[in-house]
Each structure stands twice: as structure tokens, then as C-alpha cells.
Image (cartoon, rainbow, N blue to C red; front, side, top):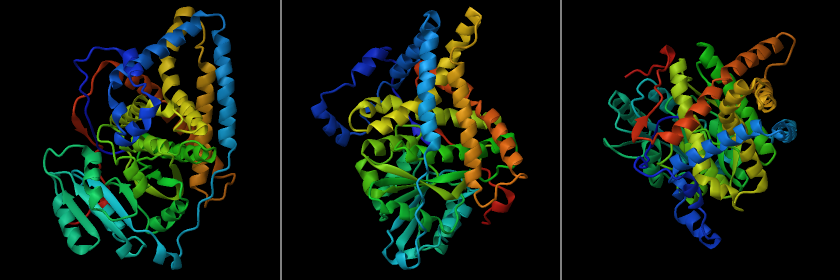
Length: 476
């Protein structure tokens, strides 16, 4: 998830979390008009809503420690989570359609590929070269690069490439242009002609057959978007990049499983494709959120679209190489993921989203956000009362589920390798190491949920720095 831009103007407002939540209930007759006229109305009061959720989680956790039947509540919740978890892991992933044949290319849809770039001289040239040499008719696709007022050699590199590739379009935004990545994408969307819109980060690496593999998924009319599996290009660098490799395998596994049980398929920013009609109905990209991809995910599902997933080929990206960079990046991801629940909670609970999708969202909201947040007061109460943490069964099950997802996910991403006695220990060791790596989320989630409750955001630009590698340098 690359550069983001957001604002909130709540610093002087009185903290009234309950009132903030209740104020969003409206007359059902007005809901459809609101839904269509302004998809982003739920953005107000994020800090108040976050404070309400934080207080509710802390007070509920403490209360469970103080009542005699608290343990039975946790055991009951664990049982329900186990039932759904078993349903999830036992589901059969949906098959991937065959690649587009040469004969089918004549009737294939037009595609517009978009890249928002800011100071990406180390990687932008390689990506544009890859995108302009895809195995797809050049008259059926175009590449748009939006240079968001770069101060390095990005403009010169793009100017040279534009003379070389006729399907390349370059737009340079002036200083102070608003909206960050979302604003850049929204600016060029009306100028594009593709039926399918693809979005890439500047550090992406793609294979020539990518479009031939992605587009057949859109033949199902209920598909509004498709996410391509992400992989880490520099996974061999150190512990952190190896951990990100297993994290992407985990994500790809549960993406497939969630879709298989009728749950939520999610967009991941880099390597995402959307049907133009679906994107327009959802109002384009939200310029008031940190993670535009996760925000768009919810709005697509609220509009009754389905998001598909492509396992192979993957889109590679550059993983961050230090603990500090990982902390900052994952904090943005966590906050963006949390924001979507605060923004769209009322629409999610409405009849607009089906039961299976609601159940899926609730399950992953509990495991990804509520449980790590509740672990803090649970640990405090455990020390104070000289007992084991009450949430241990839920935490243990969640970690076990992550271990299984990594193990099977790594196996799926290496389907060309025959599973044997020799490579099984390697995959098992990578899974164990990845499980240890994933524990960083237990610090990030409580931290971000607490900060969102007390500190208003300031208007700023945030991006992940891409360094490239020696073999990826673009000559200028």
C-alpha cells in the first residue's frame, strides 16, 4: 500500500463517542439516496468512534475478569470461532479460469493501467518498460503514469519512455495537488478509455502474461474487481523481508478461502484491477482515507460486487528492510483497515451486505483488531488477579490459524515444486519464522487503536521509499 493522503478536522471538537455513533442512524428511506449521492459520508467523527470502541473493548474485557461466568463466555466465543475457522480452512478454493487464447484476444476488453508516482527514479523506468511490453494487443491497452510533482529524475525518465512507447501517457501534477495517490488516480480516470482499470505501485514487477490471466476472471458479471497475489521481490535480504514473504503467502491463502465461503475478497493496492462501471458506481477512490484499496473494498461489496483473486502470476513488490520502516508501514495499514469499520459500520450492518459477508467481516475484525486490543487489559487484569490471561484460548487459536494459513499458503505459491521429505522442513521452518514475525501485529494494533482515540490526524503526505536493486536500475 503506497503513498496516502488524508485529513481530519476534529481537534477542537468535543469528545462525544456515543453521540457520534448514534448520529449516523438515519431514516431507511433516505439511505439509498445517501448511499448513491455521497459514498463517503461516514468519515466524520473517526476519533470519537475509535474512542467509543476502545472504551467498550477495555470495559468488556475487565468486566469478564470480574464476573464468575466470564471464562464460560470466552470458551463459548472460542468454540464459535473454531467452528467458523474449520469451515474456512476446509473450503475448496475457486478454480482460476484458463488464460486468454490468441483467438479470444479479438474480443478482449480494453484496459487502462494506472501508476501514481512521486520521486520513483529508481524503479519507475523498469515498471513502465514491463507494462508497455505485455503480451496483449497494444491497441487494446494504455499505460498512464501520474507524476505527482516529483523532484528527482522521474519526470525525465518518463519523458524519454513516452517517446519510445506510443501507449504510454504521462500526466504531471502541480505542486500542492490534493488527494495523494487517490487524487492522482481520480484525476486521470475520466481521461482513460479502458473497460478494466488496473493499478500498480511504482516498484511493481509483472509478467508478460498478466492481462491474459486476469481478464478471464471478469467474464463473470458479478466480479467488480480482481486482486493479483502479491509477492516480495527482495525476500532474501533479512528476517523482515522473509517475514513479509510468508505474510503475503498467508494473505493469499485466506483471500482464496474467504472468497470460497462467500466472504470478503480484498484489494491490496498493488496489482488490483477494477471494472470501470463498478468503480464509477462506487465514486472512484476515496481521498480521505489512508488505505484507498481497503476503503474501495468495502464500497464494492456494499454495492453488491464480488472481488476475485488471482494466485498466479504474482505481482512482485519491494519489501521494507528494517524494523522501523516496517513499523511505520504497518501502522498505516492497520489504521486504514480500522478506519473502514468506523466509516461504514452502519452500512455494513444494514441489509445492503449479505449475511455471509457480514459474518466474514465480523470474524476478521475480531481476530485482527478487537482481540489484539483486548489483550492489553486482559494482560493487566491477569497480573492483578494472579491468573492466566482469560483470552488465551482465543489468542492461541488465532495464532494456530495463522500458522496453518502460512504453511498452506507457501505450499500453494510453490505448486510447481513437488512436496517431498526434503523441502517440507524448509517450508515448516519458514512458517515458524513467519509466525514469530507476525507477532509484531500484537504491538501495532493496540498502539494504533489507542492513538486513533486520542490524537487527531494532521494533513500530510506519507509514502514508502523504494530503493530498487542494482540489476533494476534504469539508464537515463
